[in-house]
Amino acid sequence: MPKKEINIAKFAGFCYGVKRAVETAKKLKAENPERNVCVLGELIHNSQVIDELNALGIKTLKELPEKGNGICIVRSHGESPEVFEQIKKAGFEVYDLTCPDVKKVQQKAIELVKDGYHLVIIGKSEHPEVIAIKGNALKYGQNVIVADTKEQLKFYEKELENKRIGIVVQTTQTLSTLDEIVKYLTPIAKELLVANTICQSTSKRQAEAKELAKTSDLAIVVGSKKSANTTHLAEILTEITPTIHIETDEELEKYEDLIEKSQKIVITAGASTPQNIIDKVIENIKRKGEK
Image (cartoon, rainbow, N blue to C red; front, side, top):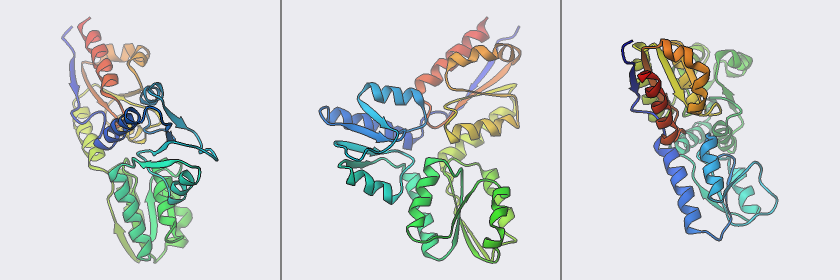
């Protein structure tokens, strides 16, 4: 049997925003060993990284206590202005690690609302990044809608008809979702202003993986099931070639038959997946290919 051909995506693993957040959080704790250092919510969507931070003494808070002390980190997804105030009121020193790309979306959303546009945020309503974008926009106006399908927008058609509509996009969304919603809103809107705020890292990751998948028998996407950019990556590749989405190399056992049958395999990973997790998957696949 010929040796397997394994292609590893260049744009796989930590994006600069995630790398910055993880490295800064660790540095903060190292520089403040005696102080309480915590994060409100998961710093990034990866349980292995959260466990590593916890082992270093950086606790993840599921909710904000009434009283606290030390440093409270605002995670890469950002928070609303109200949450920033609540953190300070509880007695914490705030350290903001919102991804710079997410900050840009928040600022664009604020600008559009201030300029009198009905704001449509394309994203998952329950995702922390989207909640933060919406929270920032609502400080300056009430005409804010969140949707990631045209079916969801149909409920707001009367509200949006013949209005000036501004669009911002969750940084980890897909271009196809943006296209679908723009096509739907174009005949409805009096004016449509689109800010494509999908981050470059996401766009490059998706474009490269799509090209590699076209000539592959199997795509392996590594990363958390809670990570929006990772799940979107898996969804995109599923439409091109058989695709499996795993969090660690241990899950590969479930797909042994599929891996054995596949000659050309592409491996990619989400923006919150650490390199050591990706490396273990690559090593595991290479071992299977040598059998």
